[in-house]
Image (cartoon, rainbow, N blue to C red; front, side, top):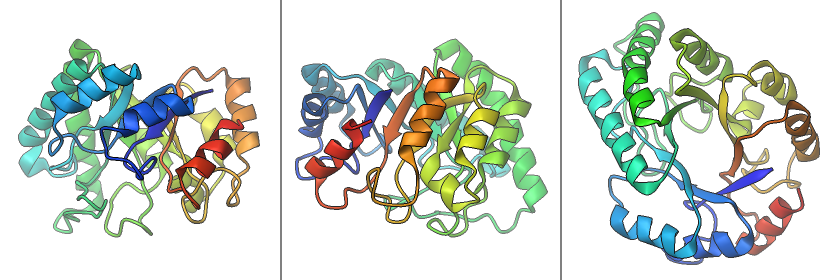
Length: 258
């Protein structure tokens, strides 16, 4: 299993740029992080190169929402800028959500003026228009559903809805991000969903439930998840987007047992 460390959550005892080397030393295969617009990306790229660890992914749509048809062109332009930055950084994937998220992952705008049908149609249209841009850039656009319990007002809560978007767009460069933490909060059936969506899954996130901590601290059977991925011959990466329960060192030991 290839493992990616989310540097927004792991190794927070160090400065952000120091975390790249920490992840390398801990045995991770790659790193990922949230938005890039407020980061010194020259320094970030240099830190990754100095540590000899690739950047797997980062968030590509910080400011806008694909459900907002009125600002669709701005959304597309931002994601295309993000794709160019991803190419510079050597990253292959950009993470997107149905709503723009703030610095604390809060939903910035619910777009209550739009019906659910209109939101869904806007999402489809936006990703459909983005697909050829991503194909030319060689970047995978990841579609992630997140829990409304933790992100009140978010439109796309369930992995099934995200999967429908990906399947309907029908591009090899628009893929599903299966976040097992959010999926467990929204109905579970993790192994079933992983198998059902194996052909459209581009990336996986893991954190245990409750608490969003490392494997073994909650109710998810991570050994069964690993067995499922092995049987599926999953060739992608698992990103550990979790909050250590008692410090990063202990969390990393739990992660590396798998």
